[in-house]
Structure formats: C-alpha cells, structure tokens
Image (cartoon, rainbow, N blue to C red; front, side):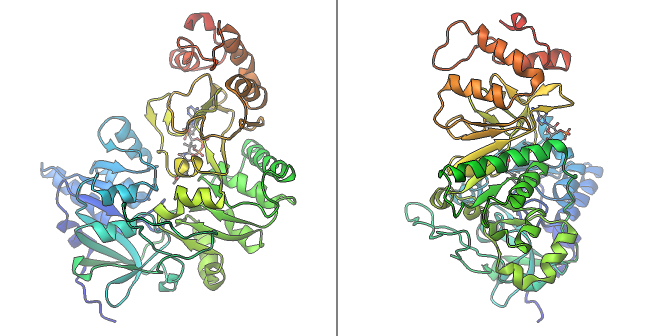
Length: 500
Ligand code: 0RQ
C-alpha cells in the first residue's frame, strides 16, 4: 500500500524541527526508541553549531533511550531540557554540570502532566512504528511508553517506520489513554493479562507531516554476568518471598511481580524463577529483560504485562520467531497504565527496585550519589513502591570497592520515604521493616543488612545519640559518613567525634 504521507529522509525530517522546539520521542529504555530522526537532529545540531548558530531541543521520552537518541544528542550538545529518566553517561555529565535542564519525574505521571499542560506545548511527536494502517492507525514497536500521549497531543508527527520490527507485532500492545479528571473512571484491570484498550494508536492523519523509513534494530545491550554478590541478593529476595508465602502473608497463588532494570533485577528474577517453593507467577512491571524469557518458556512466568521489551538481539529473535506464543504471554501497555498505582494496589504487586543507598529508618535514595550527582532518575520505582503489596529495595551492601556503605545514618537524597518502604535487602541479608518502630528498624538493618566493615561504626553512631527521641537521629552526625567520604575517599574508620 502506498502511504498517503510524505516519505522523507531522516535529514529532511530533521530540517523541519527548529531550535528550541519540544519533542516527544518514543522509547522506554532503548526498546522502541526513535533512532533515525534524533541521530539526524544531532548531525544538524553539529552543522548549526559549526556555523555559529544555536540549536538545542527539549527531549521528552518514556524513559532512557539508546545511543542514537540521548547518546547522539548529548554528543552534539543539542539537549536543552530532558525528562523523565535517562541513562546515557554523556548526558548525565551535562545534567550534572548544569548544562541540561533535567526534571526527574515518576514515569506514570509524565503522560498526564503533558496532557494537563504543565510541560507546555509539545511541538513534535517522533515515534517509531512497525506499521501504518489506513486511516492513521499505527502499530508501535517494542515499547509503548508515553508514545500514545505524544501522538495524541503533539502539534505535528513524524513516524519512523522501522522494518527491523515486523508488522506482525500487531496485537502485542494494549493502548488506553485515561480520561482526565474530573471525568476519570477506574481503569478496569483486575489481572496482569486483562486487555482494556486497542492494539493500535489511532492518530489524526492530518498531523502526520512525514514518514521516515528505517531498518535499525533496538540499541539494547546485554547485561554483565551475575556475581556472587548479586546472586546472594537475588537469593535473599527469593527466600524472603518464600517465607512470606509460608507464613500466609502472601497468598499461595502468589502475587504479580514488578522488577526494576539492571543486573540485580536479573539476579532476583533468576532466583525467583529457580525457587521450587514459588508457584507459577505473573509480572505487572515496566521493563521485561532477558531473564524473563526463559521463565515464560518454562511456564514459570505465565503472563507479563510491561511497557517495554528490553531484550538483547538474541532474546528478541526468540520472541519474534515464536510471536504467536509470546502474544499469549506478554502485553505492552502505556507507561501510565503499566505503572499505574491504582492497578498496582488493586492487584497487589510485589515491587522490587534498586537503591543507591538507604538509611537506618528505611528511607531510600535511588537517584543521587552523595546527594548531589544524578545517576539515572527515579524511573518507575516510586509508582510501584508507594502502592505495592510489599515494596522491596535491594542493593549491594557496599559500593566502590567497599569504601562506601550503602547503609548510612540518613540518606543524602530522599526518593522513597520510610513510610513506603517495606523491606530492604543487601547481599548480607533482609530487614523486614513492617510493623517496626524507628529504633527496631535501625537495629534490624544494622544486624541484617550492613556490611561487617560498617556494623561497628553504625552501632557507634546509635550509641552516641545522647537522647533517643522517636527517631534515632543526630542533626550533626547524620551526614558524617558522606562527609568523611568527601574528605578522604573512604567511609570506613570514621571518628564520630569529628562530626559531633
Ligand atoms: O557505579 O557505574 O561507576 O560502576 O552506581 O550501580 O551497583 O552497578 O547497580 O546498575 O543496578 O544501578 C539505583 C542507579 C543502580 C539503578 C541504580 C554506583 C556504582 C555504579 C550503578 P559505576 P550498580 P545498577 C527501573 C526502576 C532507579 C530507580 C529504579 C537506578 C553505579 O537501579 O537507576 O529502580 N534505579 N527504577 O558503583 C556511590 C553509592 C552507590 C554508588 C551504587 N552508595 N555511592 N556510588 N553506586 N551505589 C528503571 C526504570 O524505571 C526504567
């Protein structure tokens, strides 16, 4: 079928976009991210900069993206504003140098914030699709993210029609944009596999200014192999869940799981998958990584609702080669549905995310090193944590070769408060904080989660607090370990007297 839209090269399409404009790109992780147009925009930016003219754009996505989007634009110094989650090292540097305005938002909240107008007018939607149907229906590719919102609310649309993704992906997606208040009704999802929307995004054909043909695979990478430390964390989480089931606090039929991204998330899922005591389970999550594919194949995971298929090329080939099977077991939803707290609370999701550090009260920092340097962003962790049946945070007990303790007297940045965090886990063990008062929490965390190199100094901190009020906390010492690290490069061997 000849497309009733102008077919442009990526370079021609990039010419349409002006300095200072705001663009909503598809992409949630590198899965389904626009590739050709952002790479051409980066080239255009370089040409404009060489000619002494300004060229920067505001970049909205679903979450992090690939090297052709955040990578290329950062290299060309072409990003003016960025939201909501990112992971590119170059962009991170520019954000931390104050050269890019970065706004860290809960991922489920982003689409409605766009619709409510708080982020201003969206000039362009640049969205990767695998098929364009008569009448303006489009089939998204390996992620949904915020693409439906950008398609519906941007002034103009450029579609990247990517033949590296087969048009037979049709049927993998379930697209629903909720009504906005005061007319919003419940989202009628009662199980991870419930379908409530449409397999396609219906867009106004008059807004489609260009179609750019592309044939590039997702720029997903593999993961590092697991380490004894990540394996121990995974096992600790799995053992905790088994214990909860045996104690009758998690139903015998089990509960849907959400799991973050990265090597720890992979290790946790691997341990859960292997556990003979955990029955077949479902996932209600935002990112599906390689570790889930064998679990689906083996019947351990019966269904996975997600917004992104962040798979290596090998794992993706498996899915594509057996698409009919996987369509019965995987569903891709918009991020405001995959991460929706209403549904998370209704269906009782067990959330499992990663912390940079947590403190003796159970507050969690997922985003800022030493309270200052942005790592990636909060992502979907807050969407799930606050509404979860049980919210779990895990991380290695130390970082940077043992010089940094992941458990500190008080977090240097707060993403998830003690009121939302149920359980913390390290390679050392598990602390179930539910029903514990602040003193009990601190003792449990020191005993179960802190690395042996830091146990005594955290006990010393507790011992030096002259009068225990409700919260064991010292205004002067709370950041002693962080301050010592800044001074000496090592949190170990602190003399608390220096920080009293
Ligand atoms: O540094 O890169 O220089 O080696 O932080 O840490 O241990 O490799 O773990 O890659 O899983 O990232 C929380 C950042 C963990 C991630 C975070 C240093 C450490 C290393 C990375 P190097 P690891 P991971 C899913 C849901 C956001 C919230 C979330 C994340 C680097 O999981 O972005 O879960 N989470 N969202 O050395 C100094 C400490 C440190 C530290 C670790 N205490 N002090 N440096 N590091 N702890 C995402 C989405 O929603 C899409």
